[in-house]
Image (cartoon, rainbow, N blue to C red; front, side, top):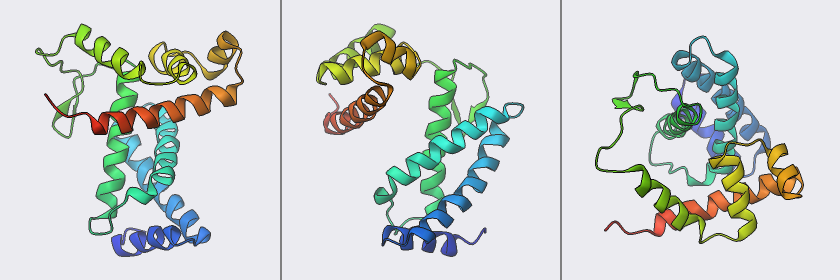
Length: 180
């Protein structure tokens, strides 16, 4: 399906409660995302597939943020692009390939690493201890959920929920931050 209007109709029906339409939307989105990621991660099909799944989860959980006044595919590819950038940063790939005009390897010379650490520490300090610990272990120290669970004594499920809730809170807090 390449028809934007039909694709958009599936999402809108899904938002109205039509589960079959929502499943069809996600199936169609998976095909488009698979091509998007495979074109950008040639020779790494397993990473491309992981990103497809991550993006589908993001589309599902953030579907209520879609504004029907704008093209659906632009919204979907924006989410996919951010997932790709996050993946490249996480995997520490420093290829100097341009991603829509943004070189992910470029460093802002005016922004020191100590500034970033301080900003992250300030934001994390606003979270409950359990969420702060889960995010630190899984996202910052890049430990697996199982390793984080073993280290803290929490269940894997608890770690996943704490990371999810903590990241959601951090996104909310960052949205409230006013530039200085």
